Length: 341
Ligand code: FNR
Image (cartoon, rainbow, N blue to C red; front, side):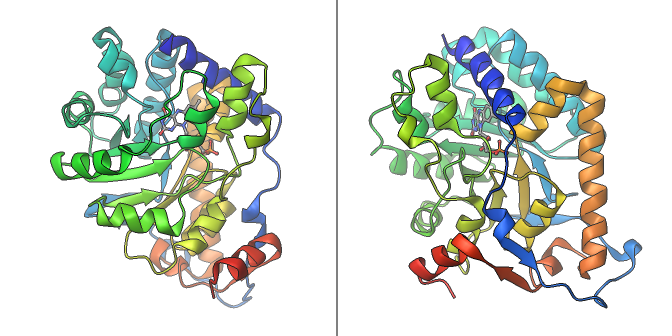
């Protein structure tokens, strides 16, 4: 049953991408144009860091899949693309491995194909400490993601209905594993209040995983063609809104959810993200065009990000954080409602 679900997620996520992820709140974030701000391209470094970790680039392939034969092949191809471009990569949820060890290879391929790259393991917030350690061990992972997904669970008939244990469990895992723990949403966003709680729990970074791209309420409704929770489609905080909401919180944040092109990467970095991830758009490229197409896309994004930084006068992702931004439209109203300056 899990492996069928994993295959459904891939099919429906790619369908969503083909339906076109249109405008989102990143469009309401604009750089003030300074015509003489530009610098020289050789000065630009894409290297970033957070929680004691160093990444060569501020871009990553975010959590997607594993657990079935087809998703094992997808993980192999994603890992090859990650190796060829130096882009960090996260595994999909490893719950299937805890239930049935015979699918271990569909996850461990991420490390086998990418022996020197940065790899993140991924578990849900109900995982035991023992299983969190097994997940990290299987991938020789450099960090562990714990995903939180109450909306997705609610829409799934077989989903979890008990959420109160998540907070203590996250704290226990964060204290017990010997790699940094990052908590992520799956497309509904993390609020300031949530990120403050994560900081108290000893989590080392928050991946805001906001609205604007892949919509898991729609995916889970689509798996049954009933759409009984149709009204939850579009739920959540956009990634741009989350980035504004957590300004000043003393915990590194990563941004993902609805990142469509290199300008969105630059916008997210300018709003304070230490790294920027995407899932659906990279999956679509892989499924439509294979590994070479994904390598092309990743290479182009990195090249264009460096070009945008050159134009904006930012020699590093850190310097991008200090560029002048305009916040407009509904995002501006969000800031006013939340008391954000
Ligand atoms: C996901 N995502 C996800 N996240 C997670 O933490 N564990 C998982 O197992 C999965 N599975 C998964 C499957 C597929 C097919 C997709 C497309 C996505 C969520 C993902 O990491 C990300 O948070 C959201 O997809 C939002 O980002 P995009 O797709 O808008 O870039």
